[in-house]
Length: 234
Length: 234
DNA sequence: CGAAAAATTTAAGGTTAAATTAAGGGCTGA
DNA sequence: TCAGCCCTTAATTTAACCTTAAATTTTTCG
Image 1 (cartoon, chains in turn red, blue, orange, brown):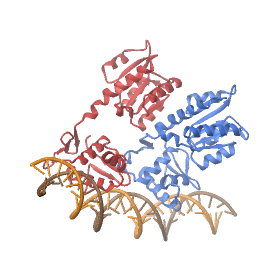
Image 2 (tube, helix red, strand yellow):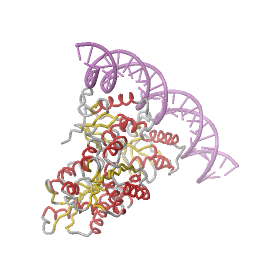
Image 3 (cartoon, protein in one colour):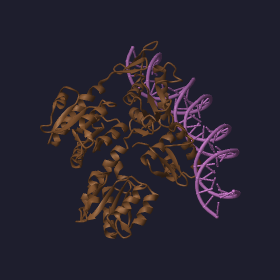
Image 4 (cartoon, helix red, strand yellow):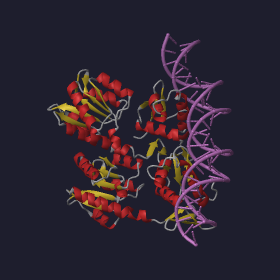
C-alpha cells in the first residue's frame, strides 16, 4: 500500500486549473511524485526522462490527442493509462480499454473517484510484484522463502543479513543502491560503524552467486556510489 | 516535503515593511533561507552569487519593473517566479503566466495565501526535478540511477564526480554554469584549489559524451565564466 | 601581431574506497 | 555446557578514482 504512494504519476491535460486540482488532490492523498504536462510534447519529454508508473491522459490535447500520445508512450513504457474523456466522447477505442490493462473516466468526475481509480489501477498493475519469491540472477536462482541459492554446483543457504541485502538489491535491480541505503535496510537508521561489515556480506553474496567472486558480473560495485545488481535477463 | 523548506527564496519589493513581513511569515513557516532585495540591481547581484530556487518579484520596482528583472534572471536561472501585482494591473503578460511554470498574486493578499502559492510552486517545480533519471544529451543518454552513458559505441560508466557535475550542468542546461558553482557542487563550500581538477573531469565527461571530445558540441566552455551544457533537443 | 591569460590535454602519482582474508565473540540449539 | 554458525572487526592488499603538474593549444587583448 505504502509502496504505491511512491509511484510516479504523470497527468496530461490542457486545462491548468484541472491539472492543478488533480495534483493537489493526489498530493493530499499522499502521492508525492506527481508530474504534470499541458501537451503531448512536454508529456513525452517528461516520460522519457523518468520512468512513470501510471499516466492520466486527457483525450483532447492541443498538439494531438490522447490516443496518439498513448501510442507514443507505449513505444517505451508499459505503465497503465487512465483516459479523461468528455461525456458522449466515449468511442470504441475507449470502451475497448475496459478489457485491457487501462481504464478511463468521464468528465466531469469526482476527485475521490479519480483517486480510487488510480489506486485500483496501481494495485492491479503492481501488486504482484511484491510477492515474487524467486529471484533469477544470471544462472542462479534465489528462493527468498527458504533462503536458498540453486544453479551452482551445489545448493547453498543464505544467511539472514545476506537475504536482506539481496532483496534490497533486487528491488532496485539494474540501479545503483547506495551503501547508505543498503546499511539502512540491514541495520536500520542507526548503522554507523557497519560499513565494513556490509562489504564482507557483499563478498559472501558474491561467493554464493557469482562464478568468479573476484570478478563479479552481477553484483557490481560503483566506487563512491554503491552497488548494482545486474540480473542479465533480456 | 522537508527539502522544500531548505530552498532559497529571493523576495524583491521596494516596500521595506512588506519585505519584512513576508520574510517573517516565511521564517515562521520554516523557510530559513529567504533573501530580500529592494531593487533590480541588488536582486541580480544576489541571484548571481547564489542559486535561488524561487523568486517573488513585485511588478513595480524603483529601477525598472518585475518583467525586466524577470528577463534578466531568466538568462541564468530557470527558477520559478511569483509576481506581486496591484489590483487592475494584471495585464496580458501576467495572465500568460497561468499556463506556464510561473504564478502571480494580487496585492493586497493574505500571508497564508502567499505561503500556499510558494509551497505549491516549489512542489510543482522540484517534485519532478529530483526524480529525473535519464538525461538526453545529443544522441547519448545518461542514466543517473546507474551512472551509465548509452548511445555511443559502447555503454560506459561515469564516476562519482562526473555524475555530480553532469547533474549540475543538466539542472542548468542551456545556461552557463560558473566554475564556482560546479566546484561547489562537487567539493562543497571549501573547494579552493580544485579548479584544475574540475577541468580534468570535464575532459573525461567530454570523452564519454561527445563524438569528438576536443571539439565538443554539448559541453561548451564559456571562457572566463564556466561551462554550458547544450542538450540539442528541439 | 605578439604577449599574456585561460583552457586543453596527457600521463603519472597519490589517495581513498573497496576487496580480501582471517580471527574472535556471541548467540542458538543440541 | 559445548559446538557450530553467523556476524563483526581488523589488518593488509588492491585497484579505481582523483589530483597534480607540466607541456601544448587556443583565445584575448594591448
